[in-house]
Image 1: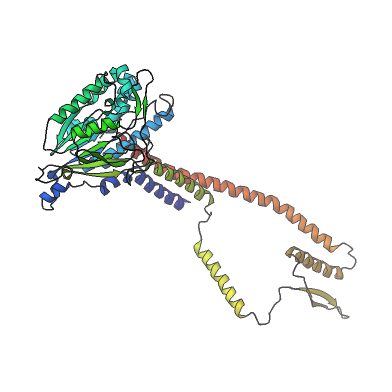
Image 2: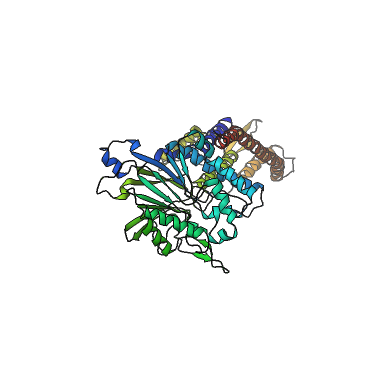
Length: 530
């Protein structure tokens, strides 16, 4: 039993180490930074990391709150869901993204789930969770990594919210900064816009402000390639293919308007007019977006040429996508030579994180298998030499019987011998052997009875004065034996069940005593601040 418990404990330990630690090392080990074509061509094939800037891009963490699962606030179910979702993203960030040593971390929006509907206290709590998950304070105080944020609809709402709840935007800007701005990384300009305000009502203050920003950007000519950052994807025709990384069905255009003022309550793509105005004004070489929670790569047509858009999948495993991901974006740190295309300064690579649901399913299956093994495993273990010896004896018996099938049997199994006592005239006793055939259809029990009768008949010949029936005596003995054997059989079965239950509880206890501390150590190792 101890050997079996140790074996199962080791299996569980390896499983927990992989599911809660090693699996988050795989993206870092298997997903490396892409090199911009311009960087490779200008350095004669040498890998000079300072020739390009490394940017990690992630989107849609959407921290769960009371608006997520319709669970009671502060309930155990909601707290557990929040904890394990936050823990997954923290492990992904600390074990997969940060070890890649990015120069910039770019968030594409939707940091909270019910941002516009949360009270100030709830919003501050979610903001604290966000900073803990992504170690914001540590990054800002002890590293040179720059952080850039993009507003999402789950952070400030759509256009209909802006006129009714202007405090939501003020609250966002106080924590994350401006919603429309630009920054430069390497020799590439990044244009960040608040996509939730683009299709709003012109009388709304926030919508004209966003378009004024776009207009100003278009006036300032620059030789640097541009990347447009928008949380909501640009317009594309219905049923447009999204490429091989897409895991869910295509979501087509959908915009819902409020009845009273025709403001937007929901949209999953920017309108066609807004898309064309953005592409013609900013002239980007690449567009990055989020919002959809799944991968999508499309090519847009503008009057200045084709533009590729990458829609990134969510980094959370609780937002409808089994395959969370992030992007590694490399931009050239060198001036492009004459004749180069703008997109040659930019290179992207999508990296996928562990499938948390599959890991939990494997934990459940392993628990069931552990339980079955502990219950059904033979008491004396698996005696392979014993079973092998028995198998070889059977094989030898079959071979010998096949070769001796035509010979004469030395002994017939269908013959039963009976001995009869004979007394001669001198008073001496002799045993005479008598043979008779028994039908092959007779059962072994019948043979036992007849043997018993034979013995009783021989005694009857010697004691002629005994008038009792031998067969009755035999049947009485057999019945009495069966009655005595039945309780013994039941008792042995009960003892066997009790022994197996005790052994099962002992094995489960040993496995739990070894692995629960290991699991708790893995949880706290990743959750506490570094």
